[in-house]
Picture 1 (cartoon, helix red, strand yellow):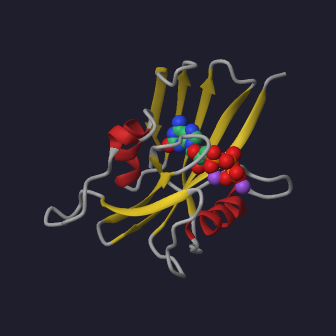
Picture 2 (spheres, rainbow, N blue to C red):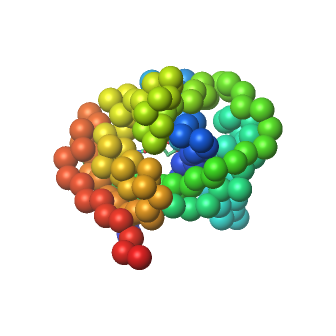
Picture 3 (cartoon, rainbow, N blue to C red):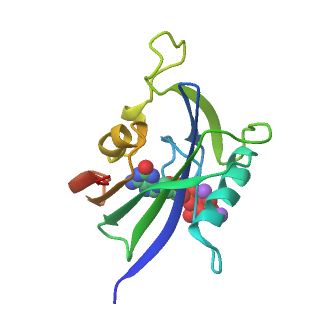
Length: 162
Ligand code: 6U4
Ligand code: NA
Ligand code: NA
């Protein structure tokens, strides 16, 4: 059968701000994203999300799942399943790590914010499709099919009916 790798991706949203990390190494190098990584054997995705946020940004947070994404990348033997998590509060001090440079952006809800807007041009191509649902506090699901050179050839994203 085919194979899938499970990942997490976690965001902190607070007072009109959203915390992103500039990826300094590995997969997605040079892009802004939430904090996350591979789900380890024996771990739930929620546990992995908390662990990865602490490893990559130095903070802990009461993360809850708000979306699920599925990606197929041509040329890779495994598909990606990425669970998206969010929290409005966190504990600890945000630190830069070997993997991520944390930065706050405006989430668009406060027009008088001095922070830069979410840098969608410097994020994965799928993010612009689900970020509006995420910012509206909707649960969402989606799929993207990427070519070997990173273009999103086909996609579908939708929000949960309440
Ligand atoms: P660790 O465990 O951190 O070594 P690693 O395999 O290095 O794991 P990493 O940091 O490369 O994981 O994880 C990739 C991160 O990028 C995860 O947070 C998921 C996220 N990601 C991958 N493809 C994405 C996509 N198309 N859209 C998106 N996030 C994506 O928004
Ligand atoms: Na990671
Ligand atoms: Na890891």
